[in-house]
Image (cartoon, rainbow, N blue to C red; front, top):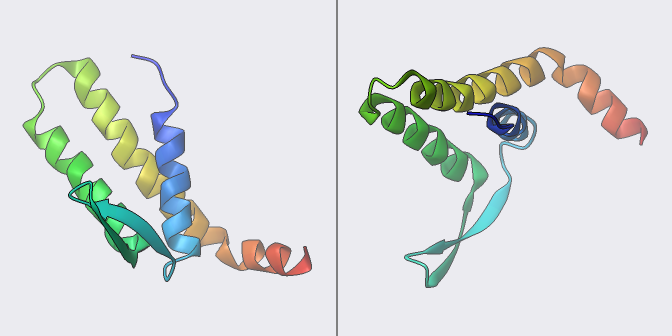
Length: 94
């Protein structure tokens, strides 16, 4: 099982840390457009990853994939939290 899903999950975690008040559009029931806080959407995504991990078989490859998503999110969120002041300073200079 090869992919970049852990890195993509890290970017998602960083986004939540940097833009906690962002709002995004989703399609509720594939029909109804709804604007909701990105924290809720991405928090729901993370919860889905955890539930999928808990419900997955004991197949090592499958569990590694779910752990990559969860670990990537946590790492992206945590590292961005640790360096957020530097990031905001750089973004202000641009």
